[in-house]
Image 1 (tube, one colour):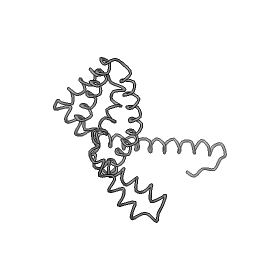
Image 2 (tube, helix red, strand yellow; image 1 turned 90 degrees about the vertical axis):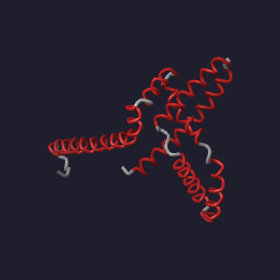
Image 3 (cartoon, helix red, strand yellow; image 1 turned 120 degrees about the vertical axis):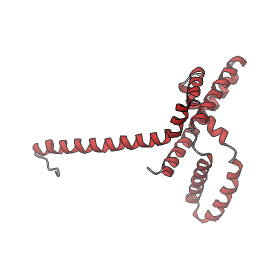
Image 4 (cartoon, helix red, strand yellow; image 1 turned 30 degrees about the vertical axis):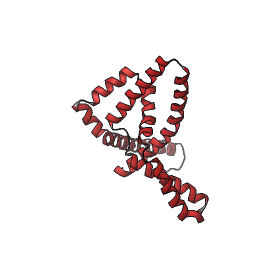
Length: 182
């Protein structure tokens, strides 16, 4: 998988996750406001620990790429709805998108919400400590490549095993009188 394709897929996933995470974050914020000041402080420090981990691990796709994908999707959506307005759609969306060029912190926060769901604050601090070590920094640096190669490995394994199963099943089904190609 090409690096740009992987980045696009990751950006799309982050966008989708961001939409649902945003709703979760709003719910979490509403709940935090209704609790005591002390528990609100815990929520804030927990979220900050997650944000620190997200920043240190490099799990945030380049915001510029993410915004470009959002802008492109917005243009496609509007042009599909009204093809005759294509020229104005492009100019309008480009102009409006400038208002959102500083939204990287919101993207980071949306990603951090996922970390807070599964790891407690002290666990996040341990993860952060690891990612500040040379081994952790190396892992963060190679993580996208490792993920890409892992996905390819699963795809290759799946293709090989599928071929083996299909071949064996065809042989057995042909013995039962069905006609499957060899």
